[in-house]
Image 1: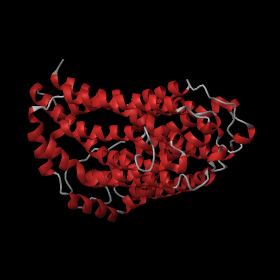
Image 2: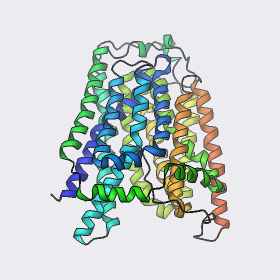
Image 3: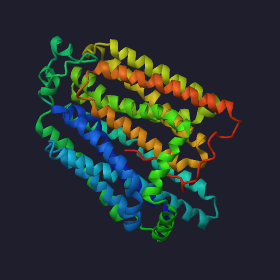
Image 4: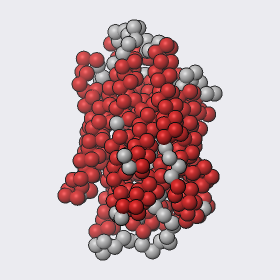
Length: 458
């Protein structure tokens, strides 16, 4: 096997093992650590730490450690979060959430840098186009990585389905599920009759072992390619300093199109936060039991992955406006239905319809919003995508932050209001683009800010 391709596979399977654990834990936080809202609070803190991390840590760590050891070290931050879940409390989960958030940005930046260097290295030897090889390597990576959402959630559901203390949920308890939740731990019979401590320890033990295997895979099998240190240092030298990047990010807000896209970008964080933090707890865990959370999230992940591929291909024929309209109608219908629906175990299929529809919408929000940023701000991608990460992470922080203080129906109204505002401001952006000359961005006057940064994903 060609050496660079071997390294791509090592990184891909390392991330698969790592995010099998993290993805499963994230889906379960609101249900597994529901006392005083600890689970969603930890996720809010995690994304806040990610915002700080993405601003200055990646170039420093990659320059000092190189890509291989930055990846390995950052993976250890994810293992710390798994360990914090063994004895979840404010003194263990919040600090480990901060650690994970700080490690998230360097992990993804180092991975992107490594694959780019490997692609250019092979292309130079083979006399091929570097961009083509890099795209091929990223395609291999995401093909393997995207399945992590399926495996992590499947493991949790299979383990929790072994619980011997499952109980029939009374109609009185079911009345506290859904949009008009009672916001009382005492009423959550399903949660109190949830998995035993031994099953929790078994699950978290498997997740921790998966993370450890990921680190060992990277340490033992990933090559520190010869051009790694030299090219990394070259890239770092070209990378703007923390303050110049920080200032460029906020200077980009002078472009009114960027300001108008803030609601749409934040909505991406809001809608993902609602599904992971509120739908899993108040609808699925409350009415069916925690062992169904994994199956429901598998449905979301599978539909999301397939639709991301589909919409990425058909957008050139349909245009982004039609896809954004489809996502808006689908999400609005889901929100209204969730406001009216009273979840009941007899309606098992319905619990899977919502995440499937949500997956369709989310696939459009992710592919088309990223594409929109790339098209509108072609000459200023770095500052634009820094703003994308900033405002999406703010959406996550806010969504998880108010998760325990507001009833679900209020969160759904907030979600609907942000969605409608997003579409109004997005419509203004499209109007401004129509008014401007075809193919000429309205804000190409802004100063240049360095090399393109890859978007991070937790």
